[in-house]
Length: 174
Image 1: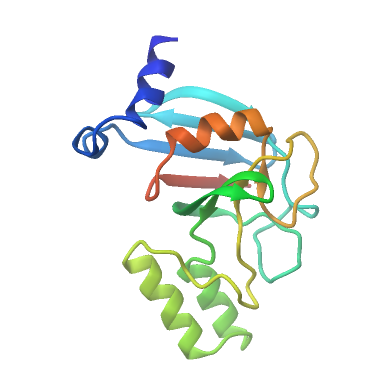
Image 2: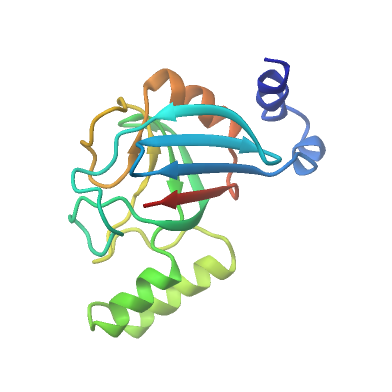
């Protein structure tokens, strides 16, 4: 309990304290429908999640209902989301864009914009043929109902939203 309180307090600490905080990693295991918050390599909290309506395999295009896989970062946060609170994954990442580019589904310009966003650890283009606006939000976990996001309860997203910050790592495993 002390560790959880310490982690939660770091979210409200002075900026210089936040810069020195230990690494935070949000790990989603799609097959198990679980999400784990790890701080400095230690598990702090686990959540039951809902995924996209077609969660198997990696996301390929807008509307496929798949939850993307791989290593991402928190690209932005939205406290007033339609789904209570929301933090966005850095999807699409360059590997997704390169795959689409090789298949002729996106042009050179979009590929370059995705690669530049990742290099600068910024929010990538969101309204693309690859899909976008993928993140972690409220609305309830336990069933696969989203368009590709990771859903937990509103109470859980309130807590997690206050703990994670832009730039933190998100790993989505099959």
